[in-house]
Length: 338
Image (cartoon, rainbow, N blue to C red; front, side, top):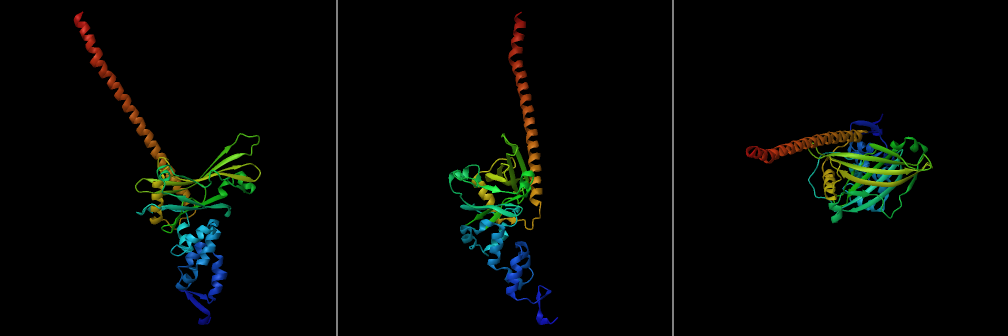
C-alpha cells in the first residue's frame, strides 16, 4: 500500500481517513471508555478525541441529568469541560487515600435512574451546606421535596417478578467551587428488600433497593455512602417512587452529620481514587464492609457482656463487704453480750 494512503497512529499503521470522517462517523459512535482509551493511542487521536462536543453527547446519553441548563453552564467551567466531568463521574467512586481539603459550601446532585440501561427518571438537586441545621444534624438528602409528588414509572412486567436488579442508579455530587464531581452510588443494587402490603390484592408490594459504595478512611475505619430507593408497585405495571435519599453511615451504622459528610466527600474528590473498577467490585466492597460491621458488632456485644459480668461481680463483692462490715460485727456483739 502506498505510504501516502497510510497513517501511523501510535505505531499502528491504519488507512488514512479524513479527520472529519473519524470524528463524525467513528468517534461519534463509541462510548466514553472507548473514547478515553483512544486518547492514549497518539497525539492525533488525542486531539480528535478531546473535542468537547463528543464528550457532551456521551455525558448526555450516559446521564440525562447533565442536559439540565444549570449543569451545562457548570460543566463548561471544568478544566477540560465534559471530558473532565466524565473522568470524575465514571465509574462509581472508591477511595484508597483521602486528600486534605476544606469542605464545600454547596453541592449539586445529578441523579439518574435506569431500567435495563435506559434512563427512566432524572433530576438535578441543589444543596446548601452552610446552615447550622445541615452541618450539625444527621445528613439525609431527599431527592423529593415534601411538597413534591414523587413520579410514577411505567416499567416492564419483569420488574414485578424479581427484576429489581435491572433497576440501576447514578447519583453524582458536584462541587461548583472546585469544579470536581464524584459518583457516590453503586450502579447496581447491593441489597433488595420487599414487603407485602396489607391490601385487597396480593400485588401491592413495597420494595427498597440500596445502592452503596464503601470508602476507606484509614486503618479499619470505613464509611458507607448509601442511596436508598423505596418504591411501591400496584400490579398495573406502574411503580411509584416513594423516596430516594442519600446518607452516610459509619462502621456502627450511625448516620453522620452534614459537616462530616461534606468533608469526607471533598477528601474523596481530591484523594487517590480507584480507576478502572470492574463490574461487581462495588458489591464485593459492600460485602467486605458488611463483614467488617458484623465483626465489629460481635466484638461490641462481647465487650458489653464482659462489662455486665464485671458489674455483676462488683455488685456481689459490694454485698459481701457490706455484710462483713455491718451484719457480722452486730452478730459478734450480740454473742459477747449473751
